[in-house]
Length: 52
Length: 174
Image (cartoon, rainbow over the protein chains, first blue to last red):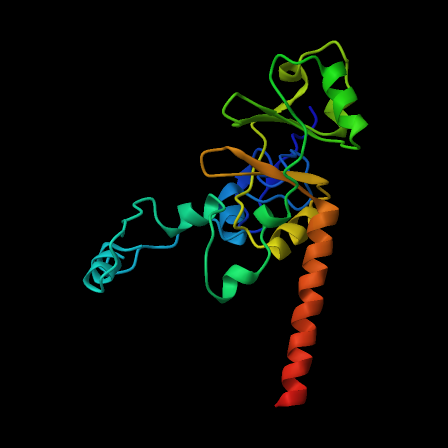
């Protein structure tokens, strides 16, 4: 039986099903959703201690 | 803004002050105006083409392709009546069986990007991933436009040159 191709996030090493940037299942520079959100600055900033 | 800042503005005499509960990130993600040094930098929403062709799920692919090609596009966004992005068709999907519907041909649930993402970061990712186009939407999924790689690269290059010139000017002056 042929080995199944495993896609891994090139930023954090997590195993993923497809690249969150280009949606490809064979992306050589695959990125998971979590790393992509951080890389593109889309992550919500943590709330300040004063709640503002 | 924060509730405290809202109260402070009211104490300063501003009459119309609102607490935007969804927060600053949501405001920026909607492509709404902002101020400050970073606000001047071009972002995905500024560079995205707003005139990208769109179609509905039921549209015949042959008609969609003809319409897109006529205006020189190799991408079409499938949206609903609220302009929420449901799917994407790039050159490969547009070239498939013309008798299919857009729903049958499209890539469902494509990755989308928020308007406030810096253009330099989008350009770098698009080059690295060899992606010709990326849909830009609000947090609710409403289409803002499509960012083309050549536009993103050109704008990122222009920005880089401008910053380089600015630094050189600072060094000469300082």
